[in-house]
Image (cartoon, rainbow, N blue to C red; front, side):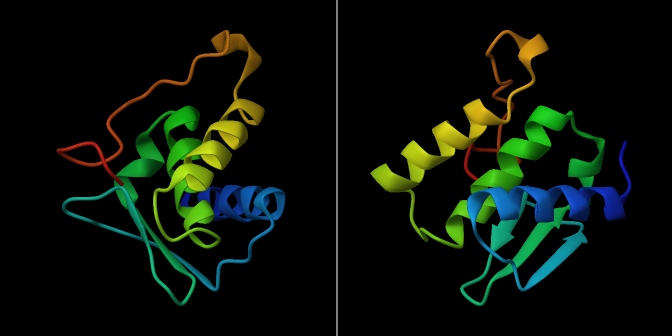
Length: 109
């Protein structure tokens, strides 16, 4: 488990890499999603992410950060997500990202 402060630091570090600036970062209990992104730049993450492995946290964070640039799941969004995930993979994972379900229940953030 990481602290909420460390998680927020990770969000800001990845935000610099992506070239976006979230206006607010919140961590709270969410029933159906790992995270959400508002049109005003507010990112909200489910507090259970703090217990997830780094790879899962990174995938969810990058997904939401990219929504600050691309609000939909179009071709550009998916291409960039794939590229950033490859850049941020741990070399000890032999190039695999654990694809745990990204939504609590049916596979979408």
